[in-house]
Amino acid sequence: MPGDQSDWAAILQQHVTPEHSVNYKALKEHDRAALDRYVQSLAAPWPAMSPDARKAALINAYNALTILWIVQNYPVESIWRTKKPFTDKRHTVDGKKVSLDDIETELRSKDPRIHAALVCAARSCPPLRREPYSAERVNRQLDDNMREWLSMPDRNRFDKAGNTAYISKIFDWYGKDFDRLGGVRAVLAKYVPASKAMKIKYQDYRWGLNDTSDLGSNYSQFNFLIDKVRN
Image 1 (spheres, one colour):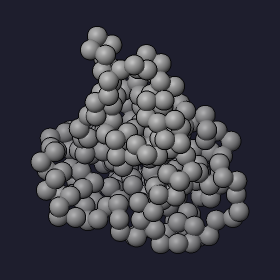
Image 2: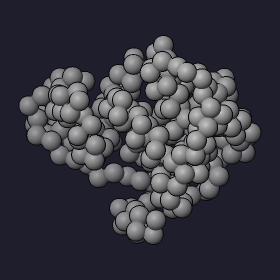
Image 3: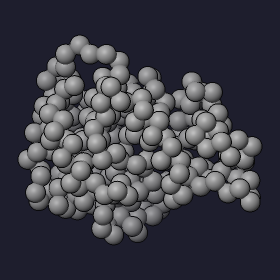
């Protein structure tokens, strides 16, 4: 695996809460050097590795680069308050200049479950694991993340009485990706069997920062639309 995983593991343990929020302030003040060191270690060309190893390494890279970008701009209410957060090729990974979207695109072509693992610093994002992804465990980790993400009622809620699944907008945006797993309904039924016959409704995505403080808690859909146009 490229990069010093001990640095990344320590950052996740120390600055990500069990509820999957990030203490960006403490990270910026106390462990910015370790985060910089980890990201820099991802920049050189990577050795040949198995598909699972590359998948794990790219997920780690995406999440670390996103966190670093927030730290560089902190305090900020949303990642959308920064300049071209997903499309600018400002990062170096595996010897190439890439954007966050570039990393996501490669991962999407390999495994739709990565949508439960890539964390874009928003309150509606899937849970940020408090450990690195590894080649040996990445498939179990992705399944774990799918289950936990779908069990979080502020992100995915299953109303048995109303026979309705209120699910993340991610399933709408990337619906075609999940066709590789049988479609969105099949994915939901695999991880939440009770959802099999439910109607599906997509929840609004909350783009406020996934910070441990209240920063970003008042970031609205209107704010997001304005910032997206500016970008």
